[in-house]
Length: 108
Image (cartoon, rainbow, N blue to C red; front, side):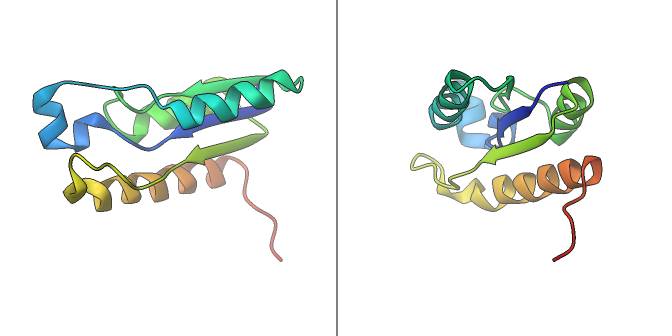
């Protein structure tokens, strides 16, 4: 079982302008965070949504890694195509709901 699954919710497929240009880029913020936590001795996995088809790929990563914690890095900013931010935010909310279904947060 993976202790921590890091992911990000920028799906290139949901951004028509950049999908047409087909110029994906690595999720550096997520990768930096995951590598730092890994350097502290935690078992870490990384989900890169950039070339994923949909949030269902995140669900498969949750099933595969069965993490104790799921962390989603989302900055909601893409200076090249600002019009898709709502769709990416919705993807983040869906991913959060999927992770919460796996391990519900305790009530406060």
